[in-house]
Image 1 (cartoon, rainbow, N blue to C red):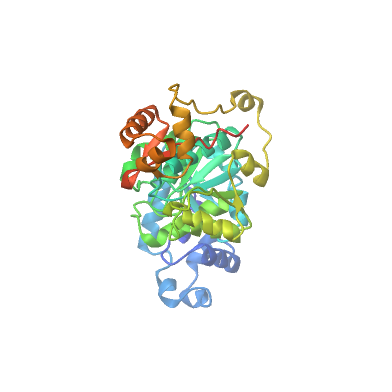
Image 2 (image 1 turned 90 degrees about the vertical axis):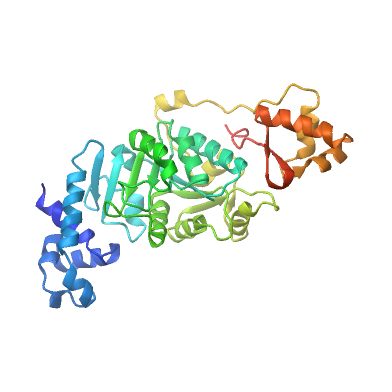
Length: 373
């Protein structure tokens, strides 16, 4: 066990010590061990009295010992600001966590990353967009970073995971916890094929105040942040704001004016975010990476989604457009009876070209990757 790493972890995991206070202590005392050995009077001016008296106490010592023991397992790593492979993007973003728990492919820390975030209550179209953009951006060499939440986050991780660049999940709990629990299987796959990061002590439950800190790491790691769907109250808008503050590119996919999950994206676009329709739009904004020969050979151009062969399919899909619409409206547009339209919609839904939505409406399932490459 490294004494210097133990001291570093003890200081970083002490209650009330965030990234800024940690760096102030290191700058004043020269090392984590010296800061832990300082008397409360010496800590004045950096720490409040109640934090100074508990610095390096039993709770912090237990957390640090548990962290070092955890890091002895295969695929588990403790990452400090002193490590050569600490991500430069994150270190330069400000308020970089002094200690990160990492599980999975540590080499992904050196990858160029893009954040894809959005609503937990996403639409099927939003999930498809997140999955398609993530898959194709990862095929272009970008590791996709997101927050392992339901909805857009999960879809982005799933899209990127099979690619060589894979995906990085930044979580708001201890790295030994999975939240939400239904993403446990996805988290296990990411731990094997991608990378999971957390700054929180082992056993930390999902506390609301921790997720903005998680969002700051996501924004700091990435060259740019793409918001796929978001309400006006979505936490993904916090990530976008943090990305903007860190000097990153902020992009958003527009949606239907009738879709509440698109309003956050529209707000970002009004505020100057880049409007994105294709993966090429993203690459034009953040830059194209030189790809290894093996990865270049593995890339395949996206082909347009197949359209049903039935004579009525193309006119029906054309009449739908890309906004939600009900069967009665479609019947009026096509000069058919609602019963005939319902039968066609059912067939197209089974074939995967149409999604049924709340309120008896339907939406054409567009593939956001169709126009790239």
